[in-house]
Image (tube, rainbow, N blue to C red):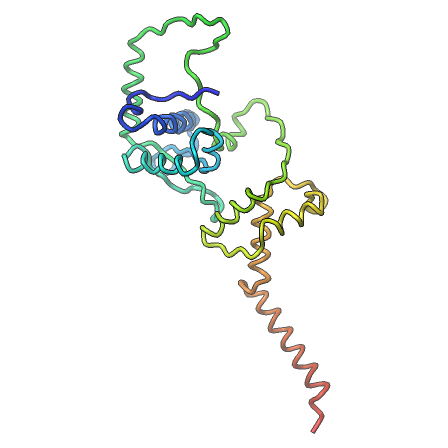
Length: 244
């Protein structure tokens, strides 16, 4: 795995900032070439903090969050939310004119310099390509050969705990625990009905919706509770109403 970065950005803003910005620039340039993910006059790419941490394992989650905030504060990146699902908080990123001008100037300078031929017969190219991010997963129509299906791997308890904390931070009330969720599906062999589970986070969101439904957060449960009360009152009157 190779990571590259713009030297001018590294000099002025930091190496980690340059590495992450290079990744954003690569995918934004790709989306611009394919005319995809264009909103409000900008081309965007997106990724979660956890996905970034998998791409850059030498940076902690808190470090990555600080780097992204710095890039935004320095006027190199803007953020948005164009997710189709309301509760999806994955951030979208676009490069500002300031950042793009740095890359444009670097390209112009590189075009004036003849690249030396590689002396390594096994080297395919002199520049490494940034890591893939979640943005490429939406580009299905442009993939000539479909990738193999990813095998479902049951989550660890700390992963479920972390996702539940994320839901709570986004304002959701979660009454079940990670241990309850895992024990329930382990007993079923991680089956959802007759099918093997594909997305455990989606299953948690389904649990969350059911929890809201049966906890009285919708009109239907309240109606059921009222009906139950009326039925009990009628039964009580039938049994004891005639007693004087």
